[in-house]
Structures are given as C-alpha cells and as structure tokens.
Length: 152
Image (tube, rainbow, N blue to C red; front, side):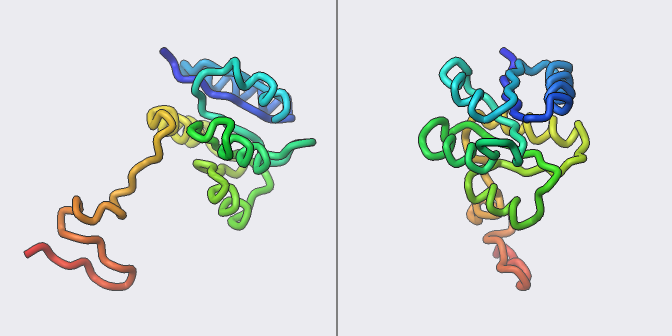
C-alpha cells in the first residue's frame, strides 16, 4: 500500500504542484486549503505524513503542529514548508514537533526525500547514532572539541 501524504496550503497553485509531485511519486495524496479543513477530515485519514505551509489564515502551521502533537495525532510526522522561515522559526517548529522545515524555493527531490524518510519511519522517532555511544565502533562519541577516545 502506498504511503499517504497530506498537503495543506492556502495557495492553490502550490497545492496543485505538490499534489502532482507526490502523485507522480506514487503517494496517496489528500489536499486541504486550510488547517481547519484538514482537522475536520482528520478521522477519515489513515496514518500520514503532513506537509503544511507555515503561514495560513485562521490557523498557521505552528498551531497545527501543536494540536497534532498534543493529542490528535502525536505519531504523525509533520514537515513545514515556508517562504518566510528563518533559523529561529525553524527551531521553534522543531521544538513543537515538526520533523523538518523547508524554505521555499526547495527542490522537489529534497521534499520527496524528507517525506520518504518520514513515511518509512511509520511515526517512530528516528534514532541518532551520535547518542548511541555503546554502539559506536570506536567507543563513546567525544564531546565537541575533544578527539574521540580509541577503543582499547
């Protein structure tokens, strides 16, 4: 079964372009012109990766992430796209639970890669080898600025 991607953007041209991209890449696609429309249909959608614009009327992408992560669908990965994001906003989005924030214009391949990783994770958080010191081939990972300790 093909993974599902939910696209939320108030710009119909962007929405149509993203829908074509994901349909061509063999995703099942659901599109919504607002976060509110998406939330109304939430119970009819199987596990999905949500790709949402940051700036939208009534409810922005950050507010949507907070609603999803605080009980509605905490296991669904969310990717934010925006023409107005900066490092501070990206940091706030990831603290709220976004998997990634892509600044427009971004390459279609980048978006497909991010969503592909998210759908393969199946809602599980990614593991990061940096924090799995016992499994590192040369022993624990060194602190920044100090060389790694060699295994005996």
